[in-house]
View 1 (spheres, rainbow, N blue to C red):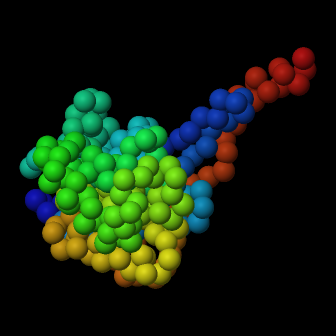
View 2: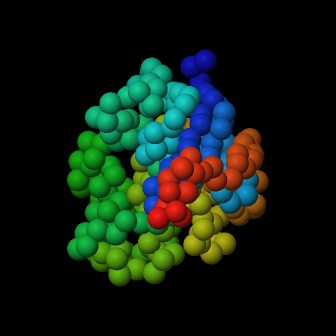
Length: 246
């Protein structure tokens, strides 16, 4: 269907702990997800059930062991598990936005240009990008006196708001959100809820991790509850026995 923006099918992911004699940690197993335009799916479950792993897989940061991740980009579905790196970068530039909990603060780059950069990367003229960036920063409580300062000097909550401004200043078709309100007070939390609702109203598809139940209930149309797959599997018992003998 044309309104499906993400279709992830039967995903499995295992991490190998090389510093622990090759022990394997199963995180995702046979996990599927469908997200339509104008809706939000919240990822839920105890710590260690793969919520962040799934979100990073949807962004192409992690390569899954099995399954496919179809993302609608410029009218066609592209499987991120098979796409070349250059195509993934292009999808991230125009289609797939990611909001992490933390801002990667760049030294000497002002808050205004950190946010405006998300627009200039997509072709917006610098003056227009800065004007839109200023408006979004102020909406999130970052006033003009801070616009010319580097976010590395800001508090954690201020940095998160700069990060959110950089994400929401663009009209992303798909947004992946990892605890977007974790460091915010209630007033700024409510502003972010408004921004997410506006994104949905524009037709964006959202996938998020929201440990704040109030936020999840306010924005999610569906919840994907992840369950623990298994504990660690030792695939190198022979090597361990040899080490013990030695």
